[in-house]
Image 1 (cartoon, rainbow, N blue to C red):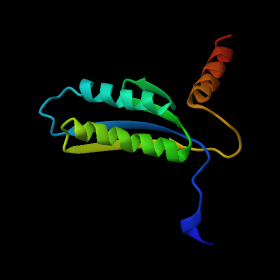
Image 2: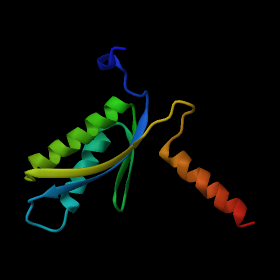
Image 3: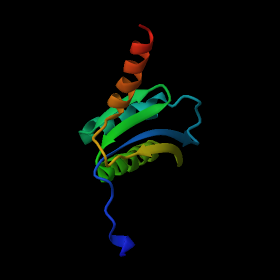
Length: 113
């Protein structure tokens, strides 16, 4: 098998949290706002939450926009950016991050009856 020719998954979602280091401030609101602008410009579906952002799309597009998010934070003065990321992909069906949440909410709604 030619491992170097393996294709990336058709789609994925990534939940990521970026931590700029060396900004001189404990607040990262400005950096988060810039990352959200990059995500919006990408055209990908994304949703910010209190501890990061979830973005969905093709594997290559998702990884590219996370790299661009690193770049914008570096351009705005952070000499180091540390990210944590969880990435999921499926081949048996199409499922968005919102679908996953709805599945759990449906179970909770049934259990409350």
